[in-house]
Amino acid sequence: MLNLQKLHFGGDYNPEQWDKSVWKQDIELMQKAGVNLVSLGIFSWAKLEPSEGKYDFAWLDEVVELLHQGGISIDMATATASPPAWMTLAYPEVLPVNFDGVRLSHGGRQQYCAASPVYRKKAAALVEKIAKRYAKHPAVVMWHVNNEYGCHAPYCYCENSRSAFVDWLKKKYDSIEDLNHAWGTDFWSQRYYKWKEIVVPKRTPDGTHPNPGQQLDFKRFSSDVTLELYKMERDIIKKYDKVNPITTNFMSMKFTYAMDYFAWSKEVDFVSTDHYLAQHDPLNHIDLAQQADLTRAFANGKQWLLMEHSSSAVNWQPRNYAKTPGQEKRNSLSFVARGSQGVMYFQWRQGQAGSERFHSAMVPHAGEDTRVFREISELGAMLKAHPGISAHETNRAKVAMVYDYEQFWVMMQANMPTEDMSYPDTVAKWYRAMWELGIQVDFVPAYADLATLKQYDMVLMPMVHMLTDKEEKTFTEYATSGGNLVVGYYSNISNRTGRVKLGGYGGNLVKNVIGVYVEEFYPLRPETALQLSNGLSATLWSELSRLNGAEMVASFQGSDVDGSVAIAKRNLGSSTAWYQGTELTLESQKSFFAEIASELGIQAEGGNGVEVLHRGPYRFQIDHNTNSVEVSKS
Image (tube, helix red, strand yellow):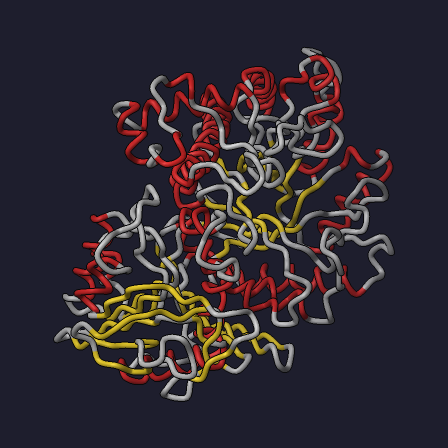
């Protein structure tokens, strides 16, 4: 468990990039800025094991002692994120193979196949050395396994991966016939009679695509096989340290999707995450808020920590804008308000060389006499002045939104009704509408139980394409036992294997519970915008549908499906359920949600660029219009 007597403040420290003469200066500047924690050794494998089986810890020992003497705690990393050159030269099978069957080269980072026996053996040996050496050191207060699993090569299509995938399938399915049924392999003569016939879903001839069920299972497998790596390292550490917590840093960003963090969060002692602003979006603080709320959902009551973000510009987006004065404080405190146990950065000192040399840091190229370092120091002092924040969780919202990685995975497949649909974009639009209204939102997974759902006055389901019968029943019970439910288009279309549910799209939940019978999809052309019968504006999507017990709120007009249901509602006694059969524009989505919130008596706080959050007795008011932050205690 993390120390609840303070908020953590610091970042990745990479002393191996600098001459020893800089190390003492680093400690002095850390003390000046209020740093109390650094992540150490994340990318140090080549320095710690310069040749196979030959280790050098002298330099790391020296750094550990300097930090300890300086009163700075250590988040000790296992250094396994990037195998050294000697390994990939001697064992090229460690390198991952991409979708086109091309083996990737050494020279970037994370250049390993998660199913590689060689990588696992070598990584385990390194972790054993590090854990045994530093487990009892008083400066080490937590452990940092690997780094950003699944960021750069989440899927490997080599023979090791194929063999591991088949083993995974044997555990998932009772027989190969069960697999054939789940994948629907009688289509295109894809039926398998022996396990050894199964391949990984690599590129197929032009105009064709791998089996949809196979693609889904391969993504599930890829998340699981990578999670095995984390658990392997975690369990080695636990042999030597049964006290300090162990984590690995997730990536809570809109475009990251490969690892199922709801599943991963069950295996870490506390959740940690990295977040970098979407620089193209001038309102990127809304995406930041969404990802922080999502991280809190992963944690599900556990502690969580912002392990990485930037002090100013990042270096890997098309246009890397520097943060404006005061923006960094707003960004950081938005995370703290939503439950983070502190604020950490990549990295401490901005690098002179390497591909991230123009990525901002706590100490920029220009040194300490800079706005960045002054603002960082001001934030450090502010966090130090409010240690009591760490003892409280962020207050629960009245509204929950369903988020599920498997929906992301299935919507990435080809041959959908339209390529213009985007699961993350629709989720972001629904969240943004609520954020701009000043209504706080929590996230829940699609497999949430009824007790979890009943904690909320309203549950939103944007584009939840796949639901098991059990999951569909849970949402039905929620809607019919006092909970208010909003179901978006293209939801509950299939089960978790991707097999379409027959008898009207949306299954029992849409057809009978809400009462809308959907016959056929009519996606709109990109340039088409419709005005619905109630004046709201819609894009991307329409449906041929009719009422089946629901009340019409808005119908399509000026379309190929005039009179069909665009928005419907049904009174279910003590609750109401809505169906949204189209993609509303942002302003129309806000109007729709505002009307529902008013009807249900859900109160807004803030809005119009101001967010107000409560964490126990602490009130955070972050005004993005005036670039100001207020933290007060009742």
